[in-house]
Image 1 (spheres, rainbow, N blue to C red):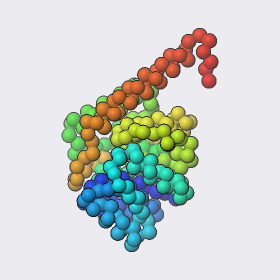
Image 2 (tube, rainbow, N blue to C red):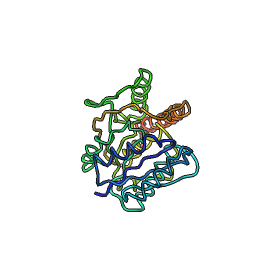
Image 3 (cartoon, helix red, strand yellow):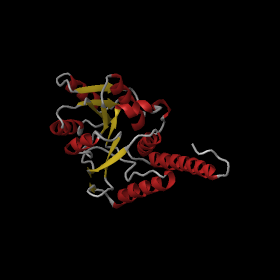
Image 4 (cartoon, one colour):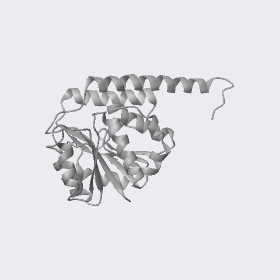
Length: 247
């Protein structure tokens, strides 16, 4: 199956070459699309030069930093237009290990969305401070309670989508970013009748560059998940009322 690994970048000049090498070391047959949001450190220039010597590397250059969700949506559109069967999300900083990619790709033969999970048996994180552990596990617990989402690591950004399921989603309606984008997409897949599988991965804290996590990203996820959860529970309650048709 033709596979495209989408790697969004912003100031990842130091880490991107190592990540691309790790991906192709584990899965030499996959293509990589670098979606660069105008990195001032020359990340886009390096990726462009690499693409001229390696036909498996492609670059989508954007002029503004519009967020993770917008970068992935642009990557999805690029890949779907070119007929890829599997579209993968991976970070540029090495936190998503190339050696884990073949496991996710193999599982995609029987699931519409495969998530590389830190929070199922066999999954783990390396070099995370306690506050990051509490933030991630707490966020995923809240998502499960608010949305009834039966996913242990809905905020995970290492994942594989089958092209067929992406084509069934209204991607033009997705406006979420960061953590919220990953939650939104998993929920959309499930509501569209798709299947979601989780496989354990080891998540390694970045060694170079700066984390893109911010208070704004956390607030967006909290506000949107809460709103979605209220609407979801209200709909469930309405379905229980006498005379309500249960579609």
